[in-house]
Length: 361
Ligand SMILES: Cc1ncc(COP(=O)(O)O)c(C=O)c1O
Image 1 (cartoon, rainbow, N blue to C red):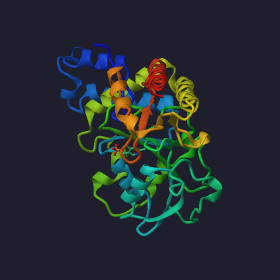
Image 2 (image 1 turned 90 degrees about the horizontal axis):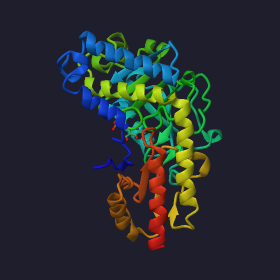
Image 3 (image 1 turned 135 degrees about the vertical axis):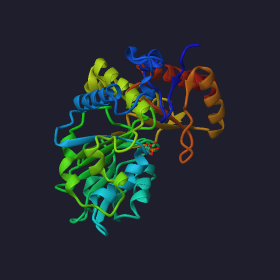
Image 4 (image 1 turned 180 degrees about the vertical axis):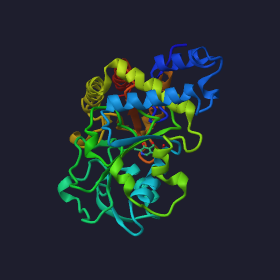
């Protein structure tokens, strides 16, 4: 049976060659007579896999040496709680800029540990834009400024790194990391759950500027302390070895395909193809996000008549196009078109959308 094109927001489609390699290596990793997932995380085999994954990630994201890289369990949501615990003093203020659902979860996780200042939010307009930088009310004494680089549900993306002066910028890049080159040195902390652009769910990448590790933060258990994790090379306790290994295979695939520069070109073409189809549908399909903030990774769209949602999804699935149902918070449809979604997948979706419209329009 041929593989479907899977537009799921995360867990999301993975490169077929990576899945094939994982299958090949499943029972016997490189002749050792066991799977990598059965070996000790402290043994030379997995230590080698781990080190290579970090080196590859550093290479294709251009991560400078004065940044530590962690591979953590717990997902991006856990990072949202650990950031204030590690980088804000008790009672200190932190600025949050909210451009969608995940900015709000970041605040929910941070509130017990920090004096949250909502410096700007585009909620009143329905999260169809990022709040314009000129309107942010930043606090001079903030521990950090938090943004969500790409809002996975609302499909709203920062196209430029905002200037926040000397206050560290903390960015949730869960759904857009590695989709284009970024200047890591503009950020204090970058974090991303792997399950969209980097690999399988279960491992989260945290990139921390090392000088921030000198901050005292707040009383916390060792296991919540990034200093300890950096010192322990992400092996303070048993790390998610299978997920780390699989992410490492995805990193090698990205490098072989030409790195983030090449993915930025492909992603721009894929996004343009899909938005053009939506905008050119004469109102049959609709995306409400202002064009300058439209995500190139997650494209929410609505059919002009909600009654068509069910047949659209059923016929799409029958045509081998999966995972198009929108998040329950928004309804409608959403196509997630991460690095591993080939251009042929987006072409197939656009062809299907045009055919559906011709039959139902
Ligand atoms: C932008 C963003 N941040 C945070 C999360 C939460 O991630 P996790 O489920 O890994 O905790 C998600 C999940 O989809 C997300 O898209």
